[in-house]
Image (cartoon, rainbow, N blue to C red; front, side, top):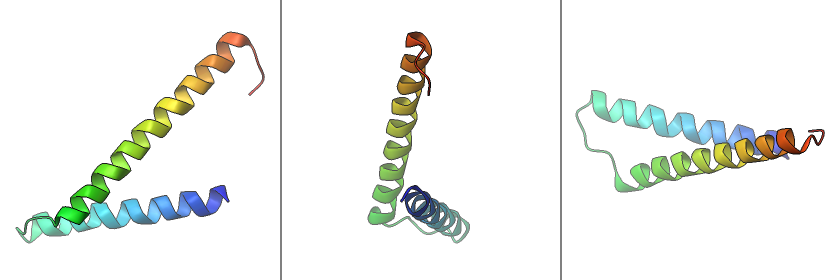
Length: 66
């Protein structure tokens, strides 16, 4: 299940970033839905990184095996 989620996230992130780049190159404004998807990916990445960092710090402080 993790592999499917990681693949889907990577595919979506590469599509959004490539679309942003192509729109900048063509001097077109980005569609609002694309911008919202980009912000959603950013928020998801930040939340996941903070959660995993907190989990790793808690495991390191308590001495629990990871």
